[in-house]
Amino acid sequence: GQRADCVPEKISMQVYGAPEIRFCPAGVYEYVDDDTVQKGTTKQDDGDCKKKLVINAQNCIHCKCCSIKMPHEYIKWTVPEGGGGPQYQIM
Image (cartoon, rainbow, N blue to C red; front, top):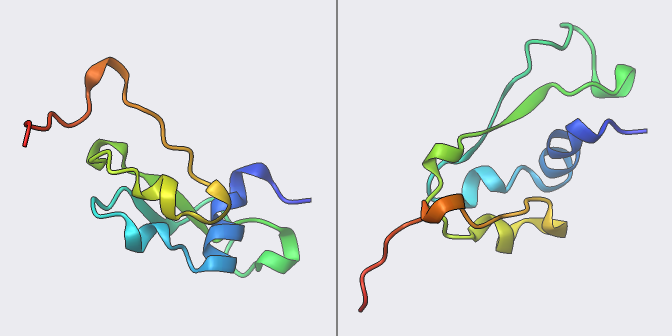
């Protein structure tokens, strides 16, 4: 079976083309080379990931775009703790 920690790399990236890296206006999500995978292997050979998802949570502007746009609700957005979200002015 699939490793649970490879869901972003095997489903989001392989099936949907990693939409989170394109729709997030703050650049929270990025895929980087996974240095823990041996060179010369493929996904079919050993089931390991070639890229890994890095979440830059400090960049998040709390727009909830990831919660709305991700297929199958892969990303679970939660309210920031302690009121750390944006402070909007009354319009």
